[in-house]
Image (cartoon, rainbow, N blue to C red):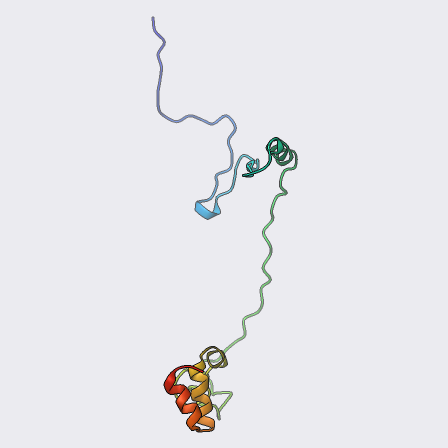
Length: 132
């Protein structure tokens, strides 16, 4: 008489482990660190490196606490704190000065700002040529 063999169905694990998170949140659940093989090492050193990795386990990493700073209370519908400043201050268009970062990075914008302050035929020619 042959043995009755069952297949499929639920199989309870012998040593249940915690469930890991998905994707980038996944962590090892067996408590072991993986042994990394270093490429292009001289002959005989790979065994020593493997033994070192197995002998010195990595410390458990704890999450770094993020300090919480209080959010300043803003009154969106309140009056302005800068009544003399144009609404387009710091924008790429309109009244007011352009953003400082844009002037430093774009030579043509710097030349246009220079020409607005002190019109010169030399600056105008540099703007038309597109180079400094």
